[in-house]
Length: 88
Image 1: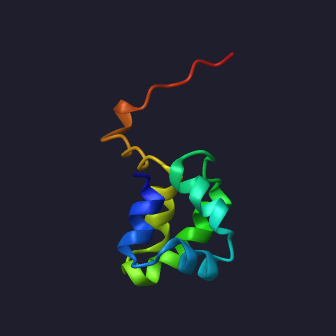
Image 2 (image 1 turned 45 degrees about the vertical axis):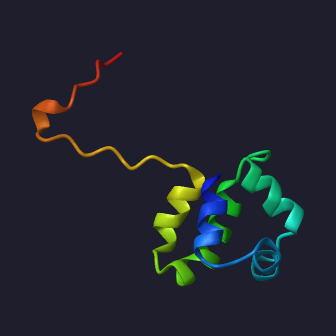
């Protein structure tokens, strides 16, 4: 089960209702849920906007989840952890 399907079901939407809310076709949502088509960043943002309120989660967190973005790497603990770049 893909992340989109899990989130859609957790929000209490069936595909038909979710299609009405998002303005996307049922076919498009189906293909995204099956993993046949990768979800573009624009589509992920669109889905996240419509899922954030019923799931009571931030749009940015949902966007990261839907787009499969990794959490940003933690900054180095100190300046000595930063490797200097060799000048050309």
